Amino acid sequence: MLSKIKFLKLAKYHIIALILMPIILIGAFLLAINNLTATAEETTITPSGNESLIDDLNKQIDEQRKKLDELVDKIDEYKSNTDKLKNQASNLKNQIYILDNQIAKAELDVKAKNEEIKVTELEIQKVELQITDNEKLIAEQKKYLSAFIRLLDYYDDKDYLLILLNNNSFSEFFDQVNNIEGIEEDLQKALNRFQEMVEKFNQQKKELSDKRDQLSSLMDKLENQKDILAEQIETKQQLISETNNSEKKYQNLIGDLKQEELAANNAIAALERKLRQELEKKGDQEKFNTLGDVSMIWPMDGRRITVYFRDPDYPYRNLFEHSGLDIGLPSGTPIKAAEAGYVAKIGINTKWYGTYIMIIHNNNLATLYAHLRSANVSVDQYVSQGQVIAASDNTGFSSGPHLHFEVRLNGIPVNPLTYLP
Image (cartoon, rainbow, N blue to C red; front, top):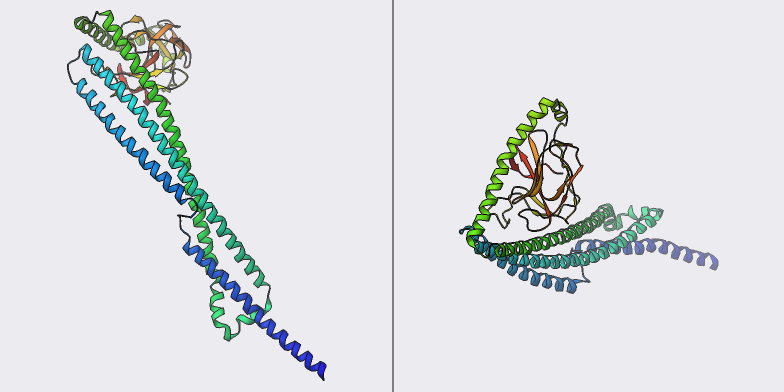
């Protein structure tokens, strides 16, 4: 009889344990879900951990931007002064003032780009800190999600859980557990949201890195422009010395250069017509026509453009419109034909272009290569695209070793960048 009573008591305790255990586990389960939900709702894009560092970077960025703004104001002043000087009468003294202002502006441009680079580097550091903080949050969110999945897997295997959920006395639990699927979807959305944040920050970091590379390239360009402007002042000082500081002799020189430029412009169209007529007589026009549409290549290796087509910052724009591209390169650099065609003109040691070569192409186009050391081709010669036709130098009215490259349509200068890749 006693053994029967003990058995009944043990059975009673076992039944109670079976009932209470799921209740306790479900309570813990729902508490974990509530905590997880709260975590997902309270998570923001401003995580803790590096706030003080980020604040310090923001202060540094603001300080650098103030310096940059001050430099920009000074740059605008020099640009305004240069524009005023260009509108004044052309004389030797005024031209020196123009060059001096442009050199000062170029130096400030270099400093301004330095400040922009500093700002960009600070912004990159800030984004990297933000990414680090958000990655930590995502890792934490994944831990919660993993715990949630483990709980779901655990309860899926328990038959007494189904019995408990079907009991009307636990309707509150039934309602909450029915929301598990919705909670899981919310948590997945939260995780996706954080992952998207990381992708966004990575993209921002790449963009900032690209911007820094771009600024570095601009720095190189500005350094080159400053060197060229310094060479232009040196050239101008040499002209003063050669003319014994005579304004009259200087004006005569400028007049001669303008006449030579005008004569060259007028001759190009006439030379092209004449050469085409000669080609027709020789029966070579058919070969010329088979060249098809023009597709030019760069006439040298490297693309360090120092002055653009009709560049507003061209130091002699008050005297001459810049009719092509100036491409900085060392003396002796091989110069190649940008497109197949026939050599129409070779000028030797002229005042304006120095030694130059003009090649005519199909579609009424012509190219001109100036300030050369020597020519490797002859007039009327057919040249193929990419063929070396000359070596670069600093002949003629030039501020330093570079290639002056022109493209002309029906004898009129057009922007070479329209035809180059």
